[in-house]
Image (cartoon, rainbow, N blue to C red; front, top):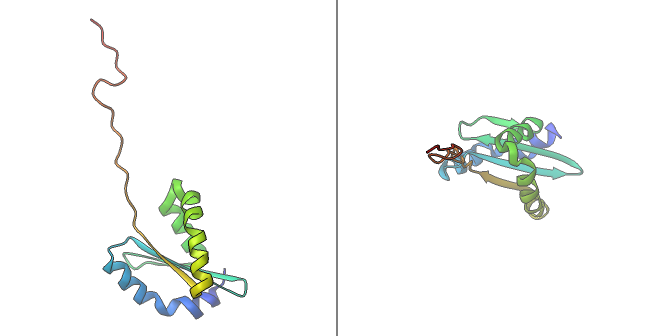
Length: 113
């Protein structure tokens, strides 16, 4: 991943992407670009922490945890189309917490008469 590409194409837009993120009440924005075989990416969270390249990928992996591969396979084809058309792809991410499962009363218990 290219730090120079990040600085050239992404760094100057951090503030505007952060404003869009907060306006839409998202959890983070993920941006990726490609030029001449180099890749750069950034991730900005709602606390305005900025992750670049490998750190962005690692943070996304932590955020998606068990669904990283599934979500990447779902998003990457569309992101690739946007990169081909516009030179970069921007994706807003909202994390939905799944409710903890609880056992129904009496489940798994044996009753004796």
